[in-house]
Amino acid sequence: MDKSGWEVGAVLAAQAKARGGKPFLQFQEGPPVTYAEVDAIAHRVSRGVAALGARPGDRVGVWLPNGLEILYAWFGVNRAGAVAVFVNTAYKGAFLEHVLNNAAPRWIVVAAEYLPRLAESEANLPALERAIVVGAIPAGTPTLKRIRVQPWEDLLRHGAEPLGVPVTYRDLAVIMYTSGTTGPSKGVLMPHAHLYLFGQGGVDCLGLRADDVYYVCMPLFHANALLMQLYGTLIAGAKAVIVPTFSASRWLDDIIRYGATVTNLLGVMSEFVWRQPPRPEDRRHKLRTILAVPNPPEIAAGFPTRFGVTLIEGYGMTEVNIPLYFPMGDPPRPGSCGKPYRKYFDVRVVDPDTDEDMAPGNLGEIVVRPKEPYCFMAGYNAMPEKTVEAWRNFWFHTGDAGRVDEDGYFYFVDRIKDTIRRRGENISSYEIERVLSEHPAVAEAAAIAVKSEIAGGEDEVKACIVLKPGEALRPEGLLDFCQARMPYFAVPRYVEFVAELPKTPTAKVQKAKLRQSGLTPATWDREAVGYKVRRS
Image (tube, rainbow, N blue to C red; front, side):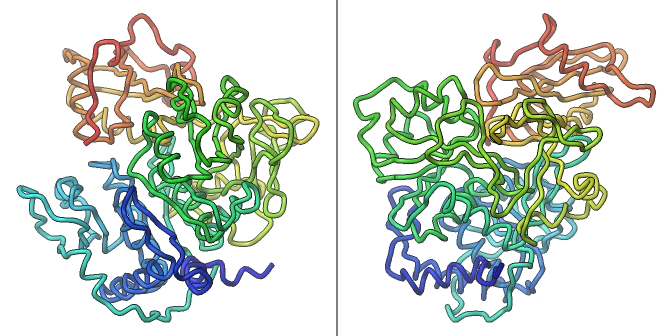
């Protein structure tokens, strides 16, 4: 298959040539920016990135909230042949330091509001040399001592002529970080063709077309918003309307206000929308399709009837793209995430111990492999052993439990690996435990997933804590310690102090036993006592 032209910069250039004056991007109620205007800005940024000293293959951090600048940075970095390293906007402390030390970018494009967190970690970021700051720096912001600071506008002062750096679909474009289990978060190495296929899947399987308006309310540092939604919009020649965050109470008003025709909902988002009081406006919109992952059976039947839309489910990971989509027009199959996107992927359900196929209806592990080169992750950054572990027997092992029925429809059931998923974020239990163990009163800690009472496959975080002899600690004190050192979504909801953690003969913590115990009478619940977690 000819994949030339599957590079981010090439796709943008082609659409700018074909649709120059058509609106492409709009942030909230701001003025739309056309394809030609975005193309020109991307050229300016690419020249600015090159002027920093970045060469093809170099890494450039991108730590920005939803807005136009995060997209301009992505387009410009990739046009310069460099690799964009996306950083979760909630990261701080050890979480932030791991990402920036693992990828080791020399430069980072950062929102001014995040500079205090960068200053706190500066001494632990030896590779980082320069911060390109978007927005005005608030008064009182700590001064960076070693890392040089310059304004984002410096990148925009360059000419809009093409830089001329050769980039192919085989080259790395992006590194995104996904949760670790027995170790830190892993940086997924994503070639240009891998990115392209995230977007092309929306065109092929959701029917994206040039007259669509994609409503994007998820964080653009994740693959769902950046690649499935925004890149899908670009490939289709459509328009994207971006808002800062998801709001269940504002969702329908936004859909109506912006004339949205397509959007995505992830995890509990669909249930939160469903829980809003019914309104006469529920069907007074242009929305026709929602990619809902997952599509909980509890609302799968009622949601399309109430809102007059088609819900499509799919399955994917940052590493493997979106290999499963529910075929449009097929009769509903509650709980099914669809069939393989066969043009590009093979998908099986296997025995997790032997990798032999499971009979239809039996539970096993979902494994995936690509049919086209470079349409899959290229490995985990600086973690070759994790890459080899995931690629056993020439199939990528997702760590997810599922089944396939007699008719070839797949069903995601649960996670096999010790991962925690909360509010759309994959959380590293290892990194939570690292912070917990730094508390001076804590001898040992284990972080586990506890099923949320909200549908949609969501988890809550429980911390199981062994205190040092003679130490005393209140749960509120532990969470105060956590809030200063980890993103808000990783702060445990539940805390339980235990005498010891169950372990194997080789001293490995038996988390399965902890998960089996779940919530006990001794479990403290922050929501039950009104403890609040700050988002800043």
